[in-house]
Amino acid sequence: MPNESPELRASDDDREQIATLLRQAQQEGRLTLNEFDERVAEAYRARTYSELAPLISDLPDETGKAPGTEPVSRGTNSDSPQARTAVGVMSYAERVGPWRVPPRFATFAFWGGGKIDLREAYLDADEVEIRCYAIMGGIEVIVPPGTRIEDRCAAIMGGVEREVRGATSQSGIKVLLTGFAFWGGIQIQSKEPGERDD
Image 1 (cartoon, rainbow, N blue to C red):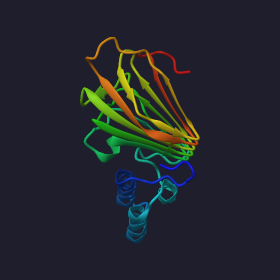
Image 2 (image 1 turned 90 degrees about the vertical axis):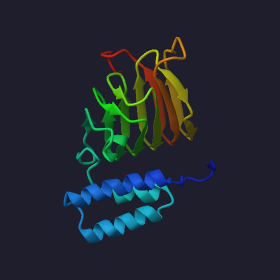
Image 3 (image 1 turned 180 degrees about the horizontal axis):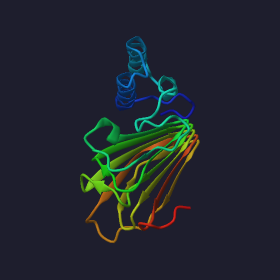
Image 4 (image 1 turned 180 degrees about the vertical axis):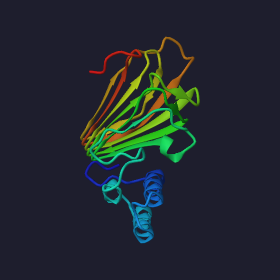
């Protein structure tokens, strides 16, 4: 991604996540069929995050909470599309407590924030990938001490902070972190279950 361009390119997965949220909104009666058709068409034509974000800015996120509230998801079914993403657009999205983590999970914060807490989570695989996209926002990832971390996150006019107590062996759970922070931040840290969040 070129540093000089403020318009970061969206991936096919990003477009599909927005389309999933739009489908849910239409099924709940928040969008008419015409509105849904127009927005989905725009989502699949979108090239950048700045083109995707307005399509869901007036809708609740995947947990049913309106923008500006603090959605919390516990014990979700990892087979559902909603269980594979956490989206905070001008709001805050988090996954905390006992919840199922699929092998690939994505979180997106645009003018908002997010927290992904794996301390009490049930992982569907010994190795999971957490994709973090912080655009003018911040994402916090918390893992239990001893978790093996592979950090591939990048920062463009932002920052990625890592404060993890390393694993003592190559066995056990591994978390691969990918994504980027653009005018935002990603914080990765390890804490004991029940340890106070600062």
